[in-house]
Amino acid sequence: MSPATQSFERIAFVASPIPEARDALERLADRYGNVAAKDADVIVALGGDGLMLQTLHRFMKTGKPIYGMHRGTVGFLMNEFHPDQLPERLAKSEVTVIHPLLMCAHDNDGNTVEFHAFNEVFLYRQTYQAARLRILIDGEERLRELVADGVLVATPAGSTAYNLSVQGPIIPISAPLMALTPISPFRPRRWRGALLPDSARVRVEVLEPEKRPVAAVADHDEVRSVSSVDIQMDHSISMQMLFDPGHNLDERIVREQFGY
Image (cartoon, rainbow, N blue to C red; front, side, top):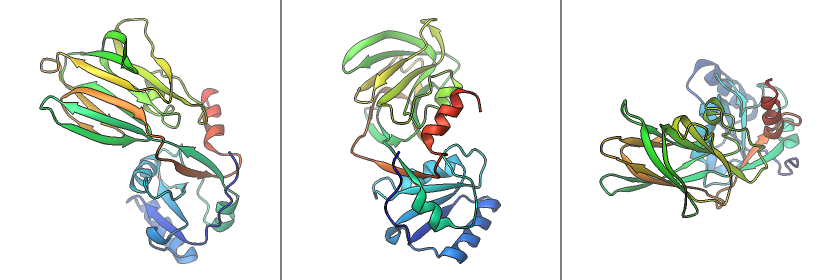
């Protein structure tokens, strides 16, 4: 991706509650200042991938670029932590633009709830019984019945998260695709999922919702006992993530495919 051209003089820091992140927040704020988020040119997130997801959700509708520094557990979405020359690093950073998924979940009581997800939307069984699911793409039935623990739809940015752990494909960050991946499928045995254009509208219907209840999750927002879930990429929301040159999300995803 092309380097960022905007100047980042006013920085707002956010941090996870762990001691390493809070200590980094104090040090960096003393050194570079810490303006209110509404007045900032850039948001600098200090923590792990969980904090980055929270930050993306929090500032989703502001259009402000996000630069993460690793002060947590998993740091796939973060840059390395160095307290020196932060303004210079921001000025040289490269931009990766990502879009979230929009989940529209309908529950058994007739209620409808919407949430966004930057990693994935997944459905999973609530009880010991496997879920029975019907899958439609753009209104056309593609899988009459999936018997499994569940199913997920992942963005390119989220393809290396839960999607990868259930043997889903890794998607280059710039590819206009989504991954549709089953979770522990039982029937059909040979189905391993599909790559879909990011314009596709995915509908998952729950068969036997009372006997085999299913929950739906968009990143960290959960809806219990759903009857059907509609999922599509929301191109009206564009988030700019900033990465140090040579360590952008495209490069990390390529590395992940070769096991390092």
